[in-house]
Image (cartoon, rainbow, N blue to C red; front, side):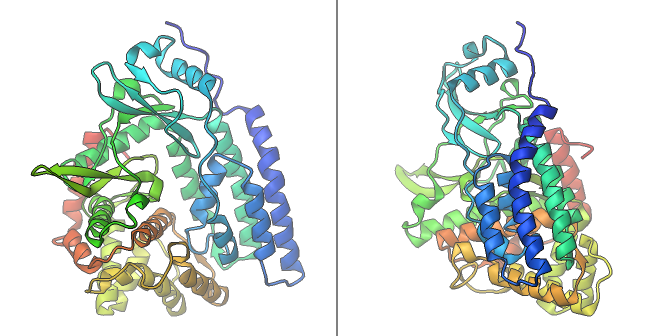
Amino acid sequence: MPLPPDTERNRFSARASRYGRVGTNLGGAAIRMAGQRLFGAEDDKAAATALTAALGNLKGPIMKVAQLLATIPEALPPEYAEELSQLQSNAPPMGAAFVKRRMAAELGLDWEKRFASFDRAPAAAASLGQVHKATLPDGTPVAVKLQYPDMQSAVEADLKQLDLAFSLHRRFRPAVDTREIFTEIADRIREELDYTREAKHARLYRAVLGGDDLVRVPEVHADLSTRRLITLGWLEGRRLLDHKDADQTVRNRLATALFQAWWYPFAHVGIIHGDPHLGNYTAFDRTEGGETVVGAGINLLDYGCIRIFPPAFVGGVVDLYRGLESDDQERIVHAYETWGFRGLKKDLIEVLNIWARFIYGPLLDDRVRTVADGISPGQYGREQAFRVHQALKEKGPVTIPREFVFMDRAAIGLGGVFLHLDAELNFHRLFEAQIEGFSLPTLAEKQQAALATAGLTGH
């Protein structure tokens, strides 16, 4: 049966409209930043507030990028990061007419015959797409994610404006070269548009975590998935924040599951879930011996932002941990160089160590503790980022390697979730268990096997 024509490629008209809306908003904030710089103003709060207000009226990729930037030290000045972190990622859902057009375009005009039921009202809405609950003819519940219209055009328009914003940042704040940051963000955002790739990511995680009692990964329904539509098994669960007042044992178990879901794939296969925010997890219950175990583990729901690292980068993470643990400066420097930092001098190494000791702090501390004692989730990493910012003004410039971007972003996001749960764990022992017997050859072998299983060979 013929499909409706694809009218949503990277269209100039759609990009032009997006340029107008994004460019005008970014332009005003950029002019304000330039004026402050020209006249020597030190307080960026007004410009940051203006930028947040401007972006708050735009949905889609620019929102996702703005929130991401707020978590990367030195991608933006602290004032901007604080303001942008307040942006909400949920976009208003598209109506039934869009759902009908999208499903027909992806699966054919008789698409409804492939489901026993399909809820036209979305169960969840986010920056690039929305999720609908459906049931297959055999009774299997599934989650069907539909990409919003014109997302490719929106992404390209937003990235072009982001590149402009970064160029202004480099000109007025030369302590940090943001070019590698932009390249990494652009590549990952474009990948998120390809739901075929997301399906492979889900298969990859299912291969890596499939036998884990604490983490559930949905099944991929390839016959109901395309580049702009992905169908996964529906995982029943409740929001993590619904467990904020649960017993400490429950909160600690959920945090342990989060740690496992993030660190095991990284330490053993060299992959991370690059978008660890509360909306990407739910908690499931389990019946054992006739009794219900509340918060028995987590459902990992979204696989758009997955980062696959070269084994050497993972080795650098372990080297930095061991170097900080034993105060081995040579090993610390080697780790930074492995990550891609270049031209490092002693004063710059000391600046990088401020951030490293913050991120690695809980992993180095052999005791039961929160991930950051006395810090609220919204302030996690803020003080350290400000100190790095101030130091780089004097010691810079430095280029942030692209592979550092999502590793750092994910670490901050994960820490924030731990704080929301108020979990108390021995993070040191959890981490030591993950890297026990670590070796680069073994990791490389496991990575290639897992990528081949998921159809990602040649990455």
